[in-house]
Length: 272
Picture (tube, rainbow, N blue to C red):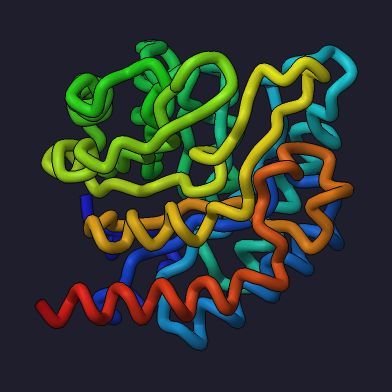
C-alpha cells in the first residue's frame, strides 16, 4: 500500500507527508492548469509527493441548481491533460459503479466519497480497476469501521487503498476531527487528513455549505504532529467565486506559506 507504486509520483524519498490538492471541481481547462502549475512548483521546491485533485462531477449537491460539472468526458480529459502536462498523478471521486471504469481511463486514483464508502458495489468496482482507491471515512462512521472498507478493496484483489478522515458530524452544522482515530486507521492503510472538508459547516439554511478556512493551518498542523501519511486540501485562486465548496477552500496564495510551516513541523517530528 505504499505510494511509491503510484505512477508519476515524485519525492517519495523525502520522508515527507504526501499531498492531495486542487480545486473542488474542474471548472475549466485554464483554471485547472493554473492551479496545478502553482502547486507543482511549490511541492517540487519543498519535496512533497503530490497528487492533483479535482472532481470531474459533483453528484452530492444540496440544491438542484448547484453546479455539478462541465460534462464528464470534458472534465476527465482536463484531468488527463494536467497529468500529462506536469507529470503528476491525479485523483477524482466517483459516485456510481459506471463511473469507475470511465474515470480509471483518465486518472490514477479513484476516490470514494464519504457518504458512499459503505456502498459495496461502488467500492468493489473501484478496486477492480486496479487503480489506487482513496476511501473517505464516512462522517457517521467510527475509525474502526474503516477496516471493513479496506478489506473490500483487498478482497477484490487490490492492495492499493488509502483512508482519508474528513471529520465526524457534530450536531447538525459542524464537523470535528477526532485525532484518536489517526493511529487506528493507519493500522489498516496509509491515512490522509482532509483538512478543508473537516472544516465544512454543512446543512446551512441557504442550502450552500459553509466553512472555517481560518482554521486550516490549525487542523493541518495537528494532523502532521499525529503522523498522518498525507494531507488533502482544496485550493483555488478565487475561492469566493469558486463554483463548489468555496467557503472552506484555501486561497492558492496561502498554500506555499502553509506547506513550508507543515514541512518544518514534519521535520521536527521526524527528528524524535
